[in-house]
Image (cartoon, rainbow, N blue to C red; front, side):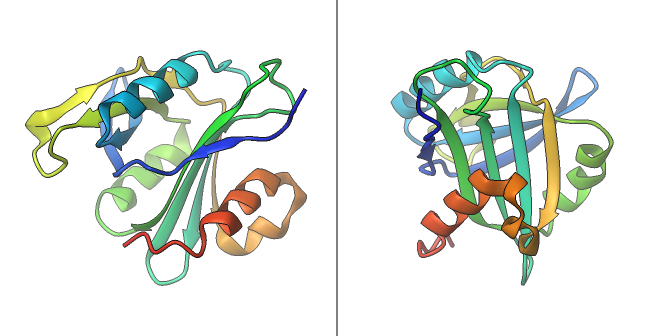
Length: 161
């Protein structure tokens, strides 16, 4: 069994919503087929093994990393979602206290036009996230953040702005 994660970083960004008394983090894709493919995988994640880590970086930047822990999961194939280069200002600052209070729900969405909320379409069901952490980037050196550190290093050379 492999502990490798196939990372998807080809989504536009995230949107914040509030539903069923919980914060919902929607990963918004511009490619509908990719959104459908990722949604199928994410909907099969075990509620017990899901991880969401928000990495606060210098200069108002943040990264988001979401996956099912491959060390515990019994699946053969593992995917994860990673996006960096997002700003901490705006919606994140409002969502942060809610995230710290209670783990949010994850949803995969598609947008025909990311500038127009009317084109957003929910692709997946609401997926509970078992473990949610907000950390400063300097904590990535800890072993418990192995996957976050690995993917962050892999995509650090990409310009995400």
